[in-house]
Amino acid sequence: MKLFDVYPINDITIVKAKGSYVWDQEGQQYLDLYGGHAVISIGHTHPHYVQRVTEQLNKVGFYSNSIRIPLQEELATKLGQISGRPDYQLFLCNSGAEANENALKLASFHTGRKKVVAFRKSFHGRTSLAVAVTDNPAIAAPINQTDNVIFLPFNDVEALEECFKAQGNEIAAVIIEGIQGVGGINEASAPLLQAISKLCKKYGSVFIADSVQCGYGRSGKFFSQDYAGVDADIYTMAKGMGNGFPVAGIIIAPQLKAKHGMLGTTFGGNHLACAAALAVLEVIEQEKLMANAAETGAYLMEELKKIPQLTRVRGKGLMIGFDVPDSLKDLRKNLLWRQRIFTGEAKPNTIRLLPSLALRKKDADEFLEAIQEEILAMETAEV
Ligand SMILES: Cc1ncc(COP(=O)(O)O)c(C=O)c1O
Image (cartoon, rainbow, N blue to C red):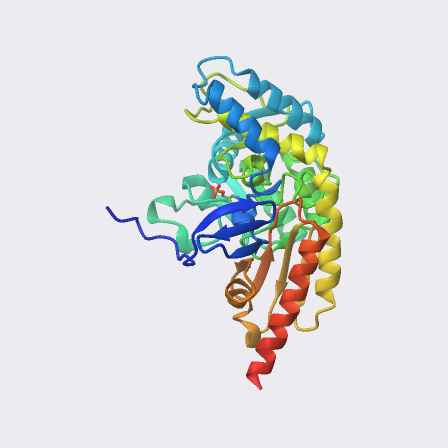
């Protein structure tokens, strides 16, 4: 049987990983500033993580949500404490799209309404509701198309106010990424997030903060929306939550009430997933990784701004984007193949950095040196 060929891949086989580095089968080392798409939060094969997951696997790896799983309660308590939202409720699932799917469904159950406000350049996942609120018709199948989604321009407070004035009583939810990831590292402005919070309260709609990519400490705060001083009704999270183990969740404000059977999943919140998620939070706390993300991210951005060929250096913490001119359009490819550094991209010309939150200053310096060397080599070759 062949694989269903949906991914354009780089011909590299990774066989070993540690911290911010990975190695291929020829023993070639790579600096990982991509984190497998913002997933590696505490660093590859962190010893505490490996130990906690291994120990759990030797006890019990899985049982369904039909029995009591104390690890889920332990995770809820720890997550409440670290996120600063001890009174929220936790529902566990398996991926970012599924987290958004459940958040939107819950908002509709809660309000009895169908309409959702989403924003231009958003990405919320590929399942039915998640892809319907994603601003990319190319990945929505005819069956995903719906009239229930209203797309508004990003960071346009006036458009949001007008939309609520016209149809606020029909709006179940507003869904927004604190920092758009796939869309190219675009930060939601504090006035926009504050307006969403105010209007959702006024009209009884649900404010969903998609924190799948920008959450879990990546921005230097637990949720990037925290910079705007707002509380969303639901936060969705996934990527960094399990450092590679598939675990996701939504945290839900106390006014949204649960009912048996309302949401559910077979795998969500299993023993192994909870052990992985707990290990991640323990390391984030013990090693002060949010502070490290803020500090190392600020340093990286400051230094990147000094490189004249790179423009619009932006982001928060270790979620960074910058644009490259057309003449350097192969820079990302060359960083991978010549400098052995993984980075991310956003079309048409943005390089995205989404490294482990444990990235050290010396790793950042290695990258800064390599990118300048590569730019120089490319410019010299051009002449
Ligand atoms: C902001 C955001 N939401 C949702 C998703 C979907 O997550 P998953 O691929 O785990 O379904 C992604 C994935 O890139 C994302 O960046």
